[in-house]
Image (cartoon, rainbow over the protein chains, first blue to last red):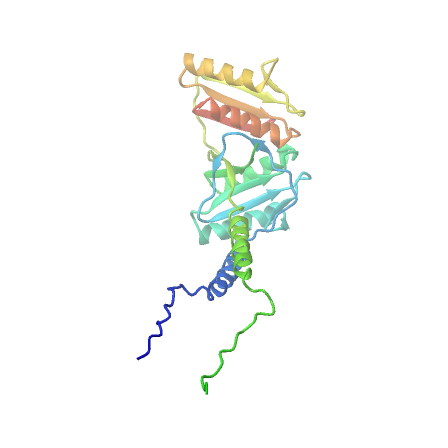
Length: 133
Length: 134
């Protein structure tokens, strides 16, 4: 008769696959953040308090640098090109929200030009992008 | 005689235990980075190009921003808190108060944003701005 005691095996959760899951998640999130990546123009954001989120589902960002250069996705545009692009994107996504992201030192005349185009194209709601101070 | 095959102990030459920690830290980093692209600011309603509105002259306050960003009410220089007080008093007296801001073409954008922010804080219902001499 064997009197040897049976060795109890402690219950354990296998965690060896955790690093694989981690890396898969990492790749997924890296790809998502790459899709979300936006080409920025070097500007100093204007600052204000009590601002709110103006982001919508579809966004169209117009960047204006201190010299008055207008950019879309890092590409410089003249007023005709901007107008054509706005019309094109409006037909694709009528609910598109326009964001104006301008440098704090940009003279107002350049922004007035952009707003005039938006008014001409009957864009009603415009977001002025500001950094919270 | 022991015929049981000996269990091989596998040794990990590279410590991989901390790799999952590293992966999760990187995940957190990328999640934070992905959340950075949220625009904050003010939402404005642009009027149509040829819309006109009749305003009682008594309900109208005309403000002016000059090329250096100084704010004027008539000939008087106003500070931003001063503007807020003036507008709040005005709204108290005339609920249909309309504020018209005329901006010099060279005025820096930051000053325009400051004035728009101050006007929003006073909750004035009719606020419009245009470039000077337009």
